[in-house]
Image 1 (cartoon, one colour):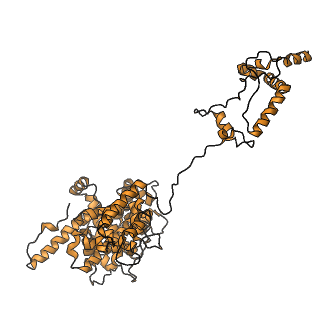
Image 2 (cartoon, helix red, strand yellow):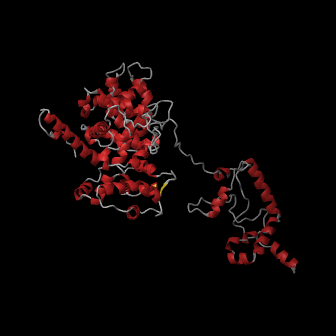
Length: 541
């Protein structure tokens, strides 16, 4: 019976083997049927000749032709192998599916280039996606149109100066072409004029600004490159001095300082100290490009260049803010040697600070002194202290005082450490006949105020995430501000709500400037110099 089945299978017409019409369920249940039919087809002599012919055609690169006639219904008649494909045509390739067939993806991913040189290799080659360059070590080259526009403006400004521009003529280039603050003119000029010829030609400027890809960099990177020394990757305080000198020489709001060079120097120093206090977050005196981009210094510089009244530039450049800082220092420095000791500092704010916190400051725990004199604080050290004391809402201030209270330096403030500083506050309240507040009650109040992650200690992260954190330090070592917080003047609260953009430092500096200017006017009046009050001295708020 097996032999009879085999003969019947042999006699099956290949044209009738339409396997695609067989039920998938039937093939799944009887896979041997499909396997048997395929094996039988491979044993036919015509199949062997066809396969050999196709292989030879593939080797020679000839078109693939399949002999046979699609009109024939009798496989036994004729000499050619009956085929399911039309005569004289190759089986068509499956079209690329946009639906993302998993089978098509797997097949395409594993297909390499044919070693037989078949035309099919053009279809099977993987598509190479060209990724455009996204990193340029020396800056991204400017687009053609932008470059042409810039060159046109440069030619216009240099047209009447074929021999080049001198330093006093360079401000238009700085402002109009480079879009930098005008007081960067001298620094940019000297950066290009490396040979110190006193002249910058059109070609030298184009080579530096256009061909050097400076024009496509962001303004923070441009300023960083202009200011920094060639062999460094950071800015120092010295790098800002040329810019501040030009600001003092050209800004209309600082013209009144022209006749007092010593105060010009102090103003420039104070601005630089304030910049490094807020922007140089690492505190190492080396201001990086990342720090410059994260800070608000660039916006403040642009504001200072646009605003004629320098006192309206509250960030860094306000002369009134400098005046308050310098006068406070001068009041404490009784011998005027430009150094302050512990006894001088304890008088700050009408003896507001405790001896214990002053001892911590002079132990240089929060910051190393730059005075280089044992037991003495210099002007730069005082600027850091005063900014920290009068604006405890800022991150530099919170870090400054956190280091003071953290006696063991383990990064947390424990109740024992806070009680150590509060004990002196408690004693002072008793001496002033104030009702003392026990530390246990104060601790509960501070925990409710800060809501730390762990109520058994405070971390710097807890303090930075709360707007009332500065009050914690006032409670521990500043009696005047502690009492002011307890009484809470409604007028000050309303003022803060009306001017939410002003910082604690802005409000303090405004009040102090008015007080100091009134005292100065009163002193002038007592000497017969005129009016007691001049409204022009009032801060612009």
